[in-house]
Length: 67
Image 1 (cartoon, helix red, strand yellow):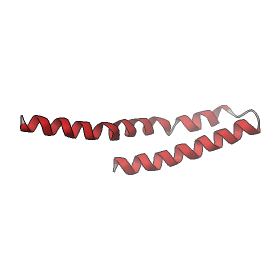
Image 2 (cartoon, one colour):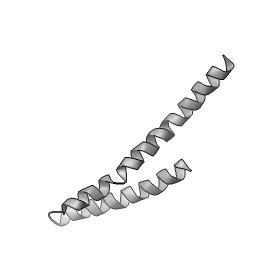
Image 3 (cartoon, helix red, strand yellow):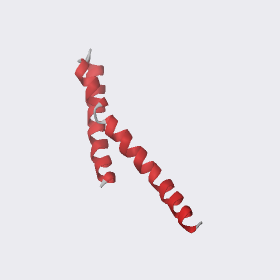
Image 4 (cartoon, one colour):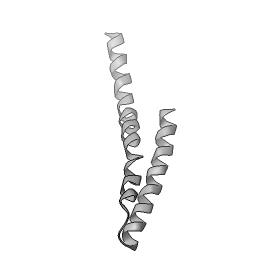
């Protein structure tokens, strides 16, 4: 479930970043366009840290059970 949420949010972040880059190249972007890329970045970081730590937590839990 977390992996699917991470995947969808990463697509939203990619679209927002592309829109932001296009706006910067065309001229002065609006302030809300910068925020548009930051909004999906927060859950993307949280789910990414969770997915990164998941194998380490499983390994740690497995070692504690055998000890």
